[in-house]
Length: 261
Length: 68
Image 1 (cartoon, rainbow over the protein chains, first blue to last red):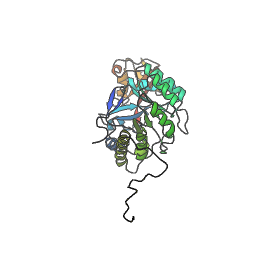
Image 2 (cartoon, chains in turn cyan, green; image 1 turned 90 degrees about the horizontal axis):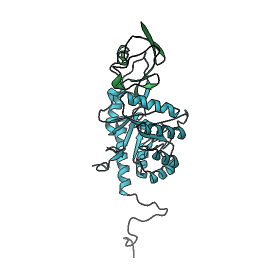
Image 3 (cartoon, each protein chain N blue to C red; image 1 turned 180 degrees about the vertical axis):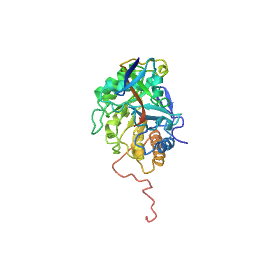
C-alpha cells in the first residue's frame, strides 16, 4: 500500500493517483523513455511542440507514450505570451488535450521564466478554456495572481531546469505551500529522489521530473526510485514531521543505567 | 491551374481543391500526429478533410516531440 491510497492529487477536478509528473525529454531512445514512464507510475506526461522538419523524418513520439496518461503539451521555446498562446491553441486544435504547461522563457542561460508574460498568457488561456499549469520562479505574490486568473496549479522551480541542484529556493516554496489554494507542483531542478522526497515533505502536492530520470545511469530504475521517493515524502508529510530542535533529546531513559549506584 | 502554399516556410505546389488532409498525406505525414496552423489560425483536426488550401496560404505543420 502506498500513500496514494485515498489521497489523490486533484487538478481541475480530475483525480490522479500519482504525484510524480514526468517529462519526455533527453532520453537516449524512445524505448527507454516508454519503460521509464511506466516505471514512474506517472499519469501526467509532458511533451513539447515543434515544427516538423519536412526533410528529416524522425519517429513519432506519440507511438511510444502510454495510452492511459494525460499528455501535457508545454510551450517551451516561447519567449512571449503571444507565442505561448499560439502554441497552446495549435496543440489543442490538433487533438492534444486542452491542458497546457505554460512556459514563457526569454532567458537562454538559466531558462528562467518571465513572470509578466506568464501571467498575461495564463489569463488569456484560461479565458480561452484551457486548464493552465504555469511554470514560474517561486514567487508567492505571483502565485496569488495566477490563482486569481484561474490557473489549475502553480509550478515553481526548485533550481534551474536540468541543473539537478535540488530545492535551492526552499524558503520561498515553503511560503507558497503554506498559502496555496491550487495544487503546488515543484518543477525543475530536482536532481535526486531525496530532492523529490524533500519537496513532498515540505508539503508540495506533486513534483515534475525529467532530466534526473532521463539522464540517470539506468533511467528505468531511477524512475522507480523517484516514484518511491514521492510516495515516501507524501506519506511523511501526511504523518506530520517531528519538530526540529537545536539540543539533543535522549531517546533512551536517562536514569537506571546498568553501571549506576 | 496550380496553386502554391508555404509549408514551414518552404514553397509547396498544391492542386486546386487540395485539402489539409490531402497535403499531409502527400507529404507522407498522414499517419503522424500533425498539428496544423493556416495563416496564423489553428486548424481543428476534425476539419483537416474539409479545409481546402488556397494560393498563398501560409501553413505551419508541427508535432509533439520529447520535452519536459
